[in-house]
Image (tube, rainbow over all chains, first blue to last red; front, side, top):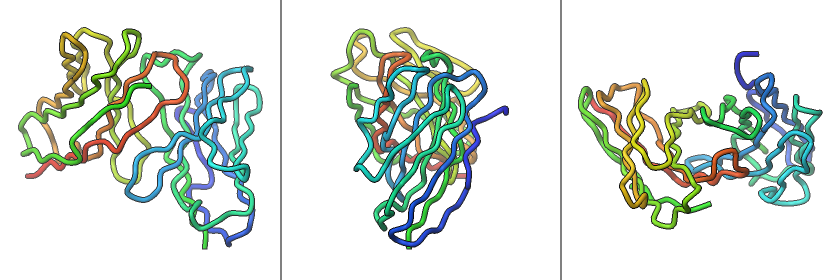
Length: 115
Length: 110
């Protein structure tokens, strides 16, 4: 597609349930990033994928969070046993081949609400 | 990645230039200055980046001081649609995780 696509755009889930968030990066972009943004706050880095290299998971806040990426395409962010503090907008971004002369391209995010 | 310091908020009159400052006193020689903006309820949008020379594109100009310890993003003729949070980031190009600070909330007023 022309941009980074994220789904669902909104997700309401009960505390303790697992959720999966999906990101479709721009075709040909080998680098993919996940960020979290709590209400009124800045972006918090979660995880970074670059091609077939091992992902940088240093930003994942707990072992309830995990992410996978199929080759250089779709990525899913999974949150297990959701907690209310997980409520946030989860943003995905991609860039080509580790070079980002035009910066990252972000998706519109998934707004997660844990009730 | 180096940390940046930005004012939390600024006002600008519509049609005037908006000058958004950023301090990055610990920037390394191979780190670039990037600017993004985030309009309410949208993902951040790349604006511009530079290493040490001033840069200009269709959206903005970036002025980097000679010692590279600070920079200014200039929106030459601000419009109401430029109301957003503006993030200044320093990082190596093609780098890995990028740390976003709190940014500057710019209010453009009619």
